[in-house]
Length: 177
Image (cartoon, rainbow, N blue to C red; front, side):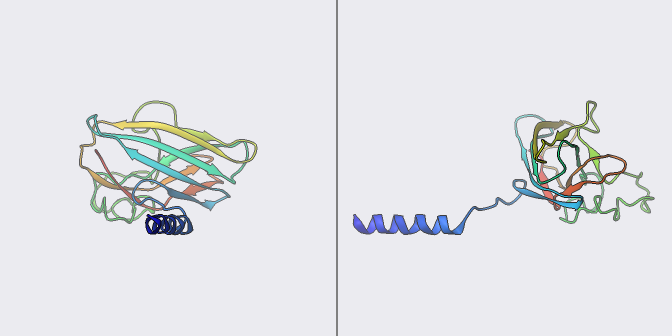
């Protein structure tokens, strides 16, 4: 009995010493400043039960400009070659997303603001007087088939035309449930 308690205590101490574990996939995607200041995190949870792409999205930021509205955007790579290779060509203006497009695909903006292509107000996050804020929303795109796998990169900007703050995640891959 004593040996069991010693082993259990040792295992608990090892787990505590190891610190928090960051999940792979769509949770805990860090936001870093490309322009301006601030950091944060994005969590994307795909949800089964409805036809198409259904997601719950949570965004948290801190250390950015106080009392600022940030537009929540993404660069999904759906419907073109290299859509799930882990590189995020769309966000970086690379083939097959570059403008003008040499492959005959119509031009596409690097980033689109939620909820586009659906109708509705842009999804935003407004920071408090300390430069922190959070937002949570659902996004459903029934035209995207279950099982579709695609790369995406998120960003938050203070202007959709001439941003002075630009926080971005790295590229990650989502599977539609």
